[in-house]
Structures are given as C-alpha cells and as structure tokens.
Image (cartoon, rainbow, N blue to C red):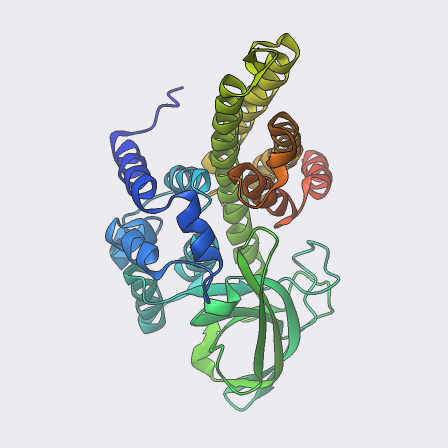
Length: 380
C-alpha cells in the first residue's frame, strides 16, 4: 500500500508551511494569544485564500472535495506551528455537520460563508456531567408553533466566543441518554436568551459555556432530521478526533526537533549533553512514539469518513488512546530534557505540552477511548 502523500497534498502542506514559517513564529503566536479574540483574522483570511476552509466540502458546494486524509495534512502542519485559529471547530466539526445535514439555501449560505472566511461556527453539544457520552443531552427543545424553544447548558464549546452560528443539540423527545430524540438547531449566538461565557483554555485556545433560556428558533433553524441527529454528531466528532490526532503528531514532531536541537547545543562537562548515551536513548524513545502515533493518525484519517460507525470508531479510538499516552510521554520527556526552562512561558516546548495535554482531554481522553475501543471489539 502506498502511504506517500499525493502531489496536491504535498503542495497544500508546503505552501501552508512556508506561510506559517514567515508569518506565524512563536513570538507572533504569543501576541495573538493575548489579543481580544485570541486568534488572527489575517491568518484566517490567508487560510481562505489557500482554499483550506473549503477543502473538505463537496465540489458541488464550491469546495475542493477533500477527505479526512487531506484534513490530516492540514492539521499536522497547523499543529507544528501551534496555531490558534478555530479550524477544528469551524471547518472540521461544524462544517462537516453542515455538509452532512443541511440542504437548500441554508446549506449554501453556511458553507459559502465558512469558505470565504466570513463565517465561524461551533458545535454546542457536550454538557456538564456528560463525561464524553454523546447520547447525554439534557437541553430541551419544546415545540411552539412552527418553531421550538430551547433551554439548556452546553459546556466547553470550542470556538464559541467568536462563532457567528452555533449548532446546538437539544432533545425533542426521549430520555436524557436516549440515542433517538436529539435534534440540531442553527442558533444565532446574539439571539435573546443566549449567553456565552468565553474563556481561554490552558493552551490559549478559546472556548465558552453556552446557556440557553427560552431561546426561540423558527422551523428554518432545524438542521437535518428531527430526532435523528446523533449519528451525524458521532461522525463529526470522529472526524474531529482524527484531526486532533494529526495535530498532536505535528506538535510532537516540532517538540522532538526542538529537543534534539537543545541536546546538540547545551553543553555539560565541556561536551554537548546529546552525546550522553542515556539521553540518546530517551530521545530515541520519543522519536519512536511519534512515528507510531503518525501511523495510527493516518489509519484514523483513512477510516474517519466511513459510514460504518463500528469500524470508524475502532480506528479513531485506537489512535486517540495510543496518542493520548504518547503525547504525555513525549511532553514530559521534552520538559525534562530541557531542564527548568522547559516549563517557562517564554519557551515553545511549554506551550506544546499544554496544547498536547488539552488534546488528550478533548473529545475523550486516552482512558475513555481505550474503553470505547474494547467495546467495538465486542460489537462484532
């Protein structure tokens, strides 16, 4: 089997990498993280110019018809630069849901808005106490005339503070943990009754808690089938997990490069510390962990677009479980090999480790996905 990237994928990676090297250095990122929005609108516009914001969408919608492997290439490159722009919540997760479920004018408006860079979207699905259980939805949608009235609380919604549209999951029927009865609604974050408390996570990525109190939406706000949104949400989250795995590989690769450079330059007893055999062995273990992670991230990307939820889930969870363990090992070793400065805010490895730690916790940590993987083995 040929695992080499295609000519088009290499071109995407190289052009994005060149731009990031020139315009998105570590000090520039630190300044962006401290800005009001927490990301760069100029960088977002550049991603639009490069076609990255329309990459995974069908050609019939003006997209480039890319797949999860193309997304993997983009996220690995963005990860190496520790970018702060909401590519994952807007393009991969929310955009994927829109491409799967929306139709007509709503589909055209939302996808074209994302592709041009004018529209940012976020999936508001996870709730307090759900513990990664995608079926656990307590937010309600009560029928009122032709529309619905929404009430509920969504937690740690990635990209919520800057989103122009929220894709909110709510129960139109069933109990809190039923698979059926979940419906998606397109909600204006500035509508009466919507409150967003935004904040920066430990990795400087922005998220927010969303509260909905008697929020009224019309019939046109319903996205996809009433009561049947869960399978699409599961597919979108699996695509997001595959993308996160690719991002983690990009970050770990950059972290290993920085650590190796430090071992070559830092001297003790008159020689580079990289000449010490014990440190060489630790560096080799870090490299092996990243290469194994890369293989599993590629497998997750290949399977992420499948309709078969069992096969897709098995590959995605295998990758997330292993990479969740590997990123902790690589991050801790990098900090140790850099010494005390490895945890300072002025030094890139500390920011890499923070982002890797948050990746492990996003959409289910290593323990959660190890359990999910074992469940898929029993499913057939």
